[in-house]
Image (tube, rainbow, N blue to C red; front, side, top):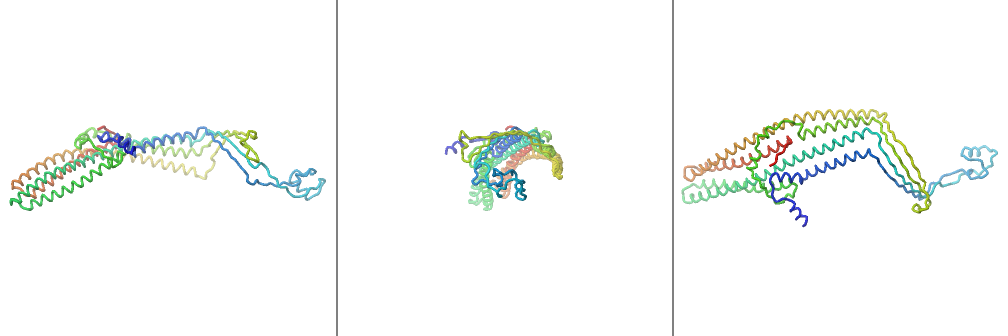
Length: 459
């Protein structure tokens, strides 16, 4: 309960478009995950760096022989009068008698070592030279840049998504308002026409024509209300809040459209090198260059140094925690040098594969550059058309209103038919919806152009 109340208090009850964008950049789930990717890349960068720094490791090994291993020694080793001190002499004595006193042939079972022992060792190692490590450091920096670019691209996509979702909600709201107004006017016309028909001054067809139009409007209104609910839910998801949260938008669709009409957007330079998609493709080429360097570095030697030390303890009983336990210390220092000599062509094949991938990434970068130039030109063209279409739809709506008003006057004066009135009403309703869609197109095409060109404006 406290969690729900706290969540409700943290979520604003109303949003302007700019407030919605700012909120989504902080709370949208994709935006948050992109920020986490940057933090993960930073940790990976340090993880790569740390592999070339001093490493200290310690091990403790405890052994308890449940049954110790048995070794065999010739009996001659235990004869105080025998001069045999090795196996060769022992077997010679058995086959050729000599001046050495005879000993009883055979072996004696002996056990070496204690039943329990402990080995504690600490090792300090340091990488002195490794070509792949140097390449790894450069790759970690590039990976961090890729993560930052991905975050910028995600923010741009989130911004565009919020603008689209915000516009869809306003469109749904305006549609409901317009349908309700049209139904109110049409219901009044139907009531008046019905009275005229009941007095025998109008045909039944006129009433039926209005009833058909009213039924269609009522169906469209019900659908608009359902779409409005879905639009709000989609907007909430885009912001990163619970989809059923009740919020209110403070912008107006027409005012927001006017804010998005700007000739400056059409004057943006086609410099694709500043776009996020180009930077991502460029970083991909850079990463392929580093992969090629990595494969080449595998032919270089690797050198590391180590210093270790430890203690050994032996006992037939577990007395290693006693203060009188004897410990034998040991220590060593050395170098490890790895020299790649022959790989049966494996390293060469890997290098050639990396070189091929690099050439592919260069072509991909060129393709991205050309594609972005086309996308910018297309986005400018779509935005220009949207603004022109908006002005055209405004004029069409004004004409449709006048036509519908004239036909309504003619109909009630008895000089116009119900068919002409219904046609004029349908034309008016279509013009209303086309204007709303034209407004939304202006907002969306402007957002698309800004997303491609990596430019943002405050609302």
